[in-house]
Length: 112
Image 1 (cartoon, rainbow, N blue to C red):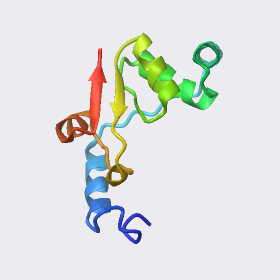
Image 2 (image 1 turned 180 degrees about the horizontal axis):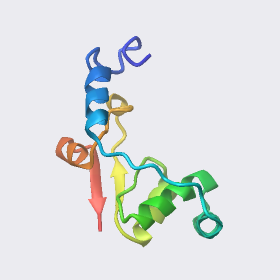
Image 3 (image 1 turned 90 degrees about the vertical axis):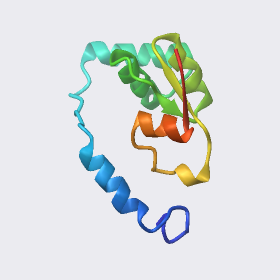
Image 4 (image 1 turned 60 degrees about the vertical axis):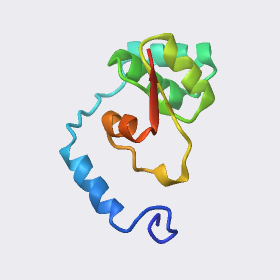
């Protein structure tokens, strides 16, 4: 769809798939009751949806940067660990694969 609408270059889906194939991807087990409580607490504390709070909980637990355009989620992220603010750009839809690539391209800024 992105190629058809000229949002991305024709070769970009293949490049992105290649980059994704090189990533080490870990899956997350089902939410435990304790983690569910943490997610709900983060949601209430920061005024986030439970969906957004779940990403915040993961980023905090693994001490990873969190890339988002959502202002509330971005404000909540720096309270523990690092946060990442993604610069809005139509050309970036689905293209940001690694933190290093994002930093190199100026798509991402990290705050400690």
